[in-house]
Length: 199
Image (cartoon, rainbow, N blue to C red; front, side, top):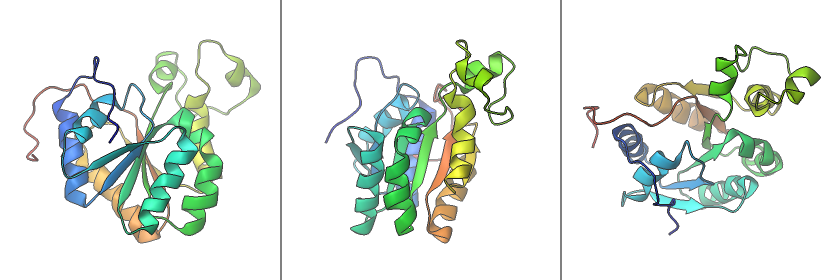
C-alpha cells in the first residue's frame, strides 16, 4: 500500500482528527494524488488500520479508481489538488458523474492564499484574459469554483479543519443526491494538539 513521502510530513492533531472522522463515517478507501497541503492528512490516514490509502498516477485515474471501488461495494473518498481537478474533468464526467457515484472529493485550494493576499478573492473575480496572464497569480484559484459549477458538481468549503460538521454535510449530500460533491479545503493542517473528542 503506497503511503505519502515521509521526509518532512508533519503529523498534526487536526489531520488525525479528520482521518478519524473519515473512519467514523464509514469511509473504506482514500484515493489520492498527494500534494503539499494534503500531506499531513494523508500521513494521518496512512497510519490508520481502518482506512486504506491508494495513490493514482494522475487525477483522472484517481476519480476512476474511486468510482470502481464504489461499484465494488466500497465507500471511497478522493483527495486531490484543484489543479488536478481540472485534469480529471473527463474522468469525473464519464465515470463518477455519469454513474451517479456518491463520491466525496476533498480538493485542496492551490493559489487561494496568494490571490487573497493580492486582493483578488477566488470565486469573486471574473476569469478574464487579464486574470489568466497575471504572473503573480495562479489562475487555478479563479477557475476552480466556476469549473465545478460548469460541471454540475456541488461544492462546500472547509475553511477550518476542525469543522467536522461540514465534512459530514458534504458526505451526506453526496450520498443523498447520488453524485460527486467537492469539499474545497481552503485551509491547512497545521494545528498542534487539541481535544476534538475523536480518537
